[in-house]
Length: 51
Image (tube, rainbow, N blue to C red; front, side, top):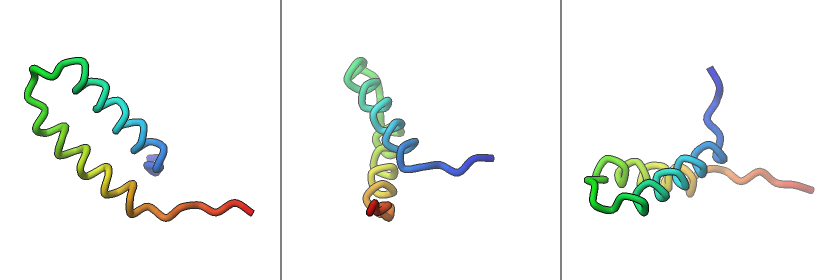
């Protein structure tokens, strides 16, 4: 099992947003909840520092 990275979360956000934009007529309630969760996880993720 692999750890989920911030990059994985950002990719999922991008894909969900593309799907919502492509099909706004659908019920995206669950996807919007997932987006909110992903955004909270991304916002709370520690940033890696480069020297």
